[in-house]
Image (cartoon, helix red, strand yellow):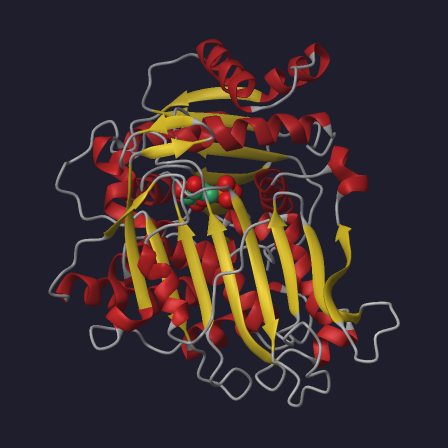
Length: 491
Ligand code: BG6
């Protein structure tokens, strides 16, 4: 069992040149340095095929941090940060190259953490190389990035490959949404507040909407994205994580085991979607050109490196039911897409209408109370209620108002922590509660695979086009309209 430790670590990052390392890991590590969260003797060893020296890599790292961190680099912090950096040239297919890494690691007795920021097809070579060089022994840990595979079978394959060399307790699977402050707050909202705790099931709630919309396109990642699509890239992990946290029963405590146990129960209770119901319960879209923030952007098929016949979806909307006592009959709507009108993530919980309307003569028809949880940006929580309009009218007149919204993190804005900062730190501490277990990943694929398969088998399986800068394809609205529901409008 790995326990929290303040011990010095050797953090080995495989994929030194990659997009994730440059955009997320390097800036996050620099910020951790700045907040003095990294042990003084911790080393950070970047590894990849490039024939670089540590000096060469420091230049690469500085450029990446400058490009992707919205702040000036402080020379004192930089000096300290640079003193930790090493570069180790490894071709992952060359077993003997891992002994170069061993040589560096053996110079200290630090806890070793391997972070695999590499495409899934290189993972097995890394596991084997580490195993062969005997670099896998406890207390070493290994961090895996999502997506783990592209279906249940490939995910199992990776899990089986890694389990030859590492125990489950050594494996940390990342879904960076679990490191976001606003997602962590969902647990507090649900389980620390008796009002929400007691009003969170199909007796009170009518339906729930989860939207994760993005303005970006595929950011030069055509090859990766075209294999994945929005379903594998976003729904299989981020959206299902949000859904399970919202729907799960109260865990026994807030340890990783208890939370994961409850989340897996939800994943296994999701109503199956396959060729028989996929056309009624899902919508796939692909963006064509349009305007984002006043700028013309190309269609998906015009992106750099595109295969002009690609059928890959960049938008997904799904209606899903959870087959358990608590949620029976309640639709959960998930929606996510690239090149949409606005970048934001939000959960809207619609409560049932009161059974009898005493205020029939009001100018306002009684509708549903809504709890609006804005995850990003401007994280806040609003509750829509009806009030009596003040005045001398004999009849009650009602108005729709919002209980004071809480701008959750305004007072902390300077110290807000990026998800990768938190997750890197947790992996160095050896705390697993914000990581995803094997059962979760596999249960998620088990539900996702028949949907993708259903799409393939549909007579017309081309995604519906939508104009960049809009809210996605028309059928996304129809999906809800069939149940007399409507997407909550962004405001
Ligand atoms: C990643 C996906 O996991 O999440 C990207 O691979 C996506 O395609 C990104 O853009 C969104 O993350 P965030 O934190 O910006 O919502």
